[in-house]
Length: 267
Image 1 (cartoon, rainbow, N blue to C red):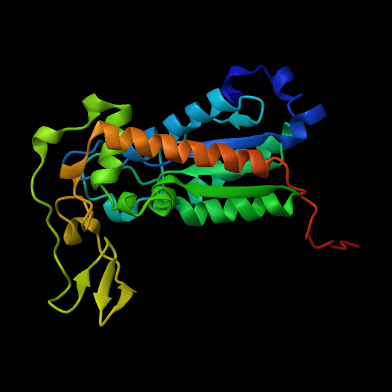
Image 2 (image 1 turned 60 degrees about the horizontal axis):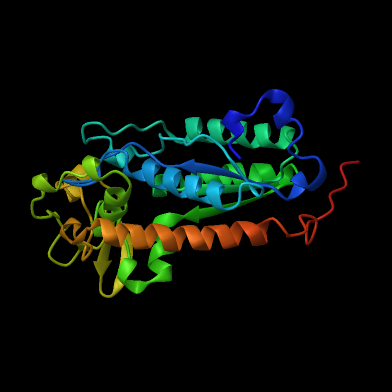
């Protein structure tokens, strides 16, 4: 079910009866650059699509919140069209969402995330929920797909993200603008393996820069080139990620939230 479709009186009854087993799902991402061909909305249109598929599969187990399209993305703000709302704003919104579902009697919450910059805010909101008697989970779809299949390992603005965006919004992917990826390494011995990571003598070290200074082409596929994107590849990934997430929600809905929880004496 969709929270936005309910009246307040119906929302008040979600947690009654078997409603305690419902999992609230917040699809969330960002509005930011995704390489030469990927749409700015890549990070939120993908979780939104997955959430819609979840609702069709298990409408009695998943309470879908409206998709959050903005996130924390300061390093990418130098690219036109990217929106960075900052950590504090994201935390405030996520805590507000947590409080809202708690007032509906729902204590289980899944952050269905499409953007890595949101993780710190999600962790903060998840612990906030835990201290109020609930439990949160986070699924980063782009990490999950690489765990499901090695060939689906994902780089920012690379072939995997582009393919999934293509499967959802084919007219939003601009393959006619494709050009060769550009990476500016720190030095000949400190080569970027990700936007903010360099490899040195077999180990990875984080070195923060504005993304425009390390990946001026906007994509950091590192083997996951946008050129390999296809709608068929994107559809396969969407199906696999949705299947996994549905199974996870079904299991999450069954757990005992009191198990292992430390009893605090506030007296």
